[in-house]
Image (cartoon, rainbow, N blue to C red; front, side):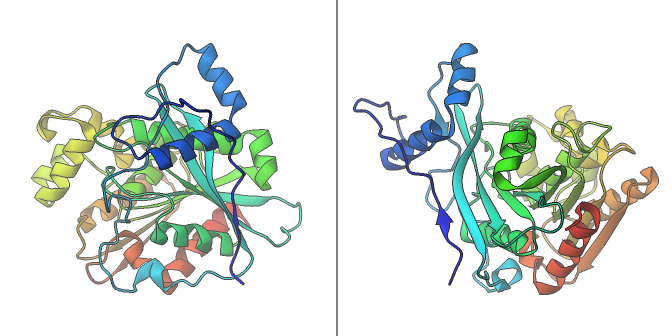
Length: 351
């Protein structure tokens, strides 16, 4: 028997409820219903803050835009994982809204068995890829990531965040920081049975960049605010600067993607590139990092090697695992890589 999908019943939407032009009414109404179910407190905060912008989901509407960054049809990487029994999934849980009206949701994948001594499990924030412009927490590949993490004994939170072109840097990382703060709140941690002092992050591709940046943002205690205690990333670009991408001869496609994400006319004059680059944001108080990459993939291997070298210089524990071939992100998350990533997360977050 496969794990059950747990979805809270939606409240009634009254006639005349506004629908954002150009978005599909059925999905719009469903997400507004979820927002009502998740959030009297959120609504009160919004009203008190004078926020009157119409809520809208951040999921892409374009056909195919919610697919994962694993573009091949081959059964590789995370697709070789078979979901076991004993996993529950709560979908479209509202974790906040932003001033532009973005309605932010996540899915929670949990083991249904008893937790270890102490009764609390570590948590992992799962961050999908897609060039910061597409992808979705619930597509089949990232749902598999979420349930895989749960099968390892973590409570996994698969998070949606604002996307290009509707929102540029730092919108996505701001959303993820908000998600960690929401997960850590006492009532939310208690609801899902997690230890708020043991929260990690996992991401691939653009999600790998965001997971690494989540680890590098801020300084000091790893158990407060939006800080995380461990990071695992696959194929994440870690230095978005002109020297690394243009002088370093990164693929022109990657340069265009980064430029669009940062909203710069030119990478040669793009001050926000530093704050969007995990490698440049590191300090010695930051958490341990697992780095996975393929030798000939779209993201130059020099990005991973340079990141690991910077971590070494700062004395931050890290593990760099490279594999041959051209597969990207969760395309390299096969059984062998899953063992390595899970072992790293267990080591630094506990079981």
